[in-house]
Length: 245
Ligand code: NJP
Image 1 (tube, protein in one colour):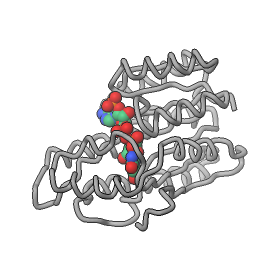
Image 2: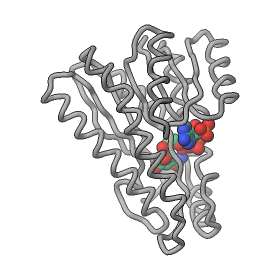
Image 3: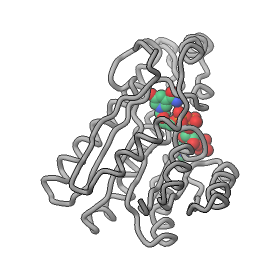
């Protein structure tokens, strides 16, 4: 209940909802993202409601900033228990459009950003022989679809990272838990990262038909954290009841 939970991509959507929910249940939350004013407003809200929160500007593509984020959390709250690696973007397009700058950006944020977070927190978790990584993957990491090749590839890759981390931790006796969440259509700012007009129109059609609010995903994050230390829950798919894919 009173764990120290670091959240990347905490300035909106699933990260923000998770910060609010976890803090309301007694966690000390540390918010990271690039938009500092948003982080401040959310942390202020949480504190005004009686919770504990801190924030630090973070670009997950910068390895040193990730290390600073973890060090800041430890300094502020004395320990680090959970790293929720959630920052991401989804600039969808067909491969033939060759939007190679967007491919790079997704690899940098969705994949290398998660690796940077692991590199920053793993030494802490290994040293204390406890800790938990949770990452927001996507149903796009489970099932291929047009316009989502690179996004899906990054999201499949982070699932692999979580699974291998869990296995290696079990073998090494470091008691680190991992969980991967695969959301379907969740009502957040994510579609604003799509620049290809046809891909955006296509995605808007899906999201106009069905989406659920990010607090639903936050409750899954809370569930994973709340399990006893000897219990690892690894994978969750979550989406609107009426979404067929
Ligand atoms: O979207 P959004 P979500 N460094 O746009 C941050 C996955 N997902 O909550 O830096 C640090 O509201 C950005 O903050 P800022 C999705 O792939 C979603 O939906 O201030 N942070 C913001 O806080 C993603 O992994 C759906 O701009 C960076 C956050 O990321 C996760 O859910 C479906 C950053 C994005 O929040 C959360 O996204 C699905 C950087 N370089 C998977 N770049 C869905 N919504 O339907 C971005 O399958 N951020």
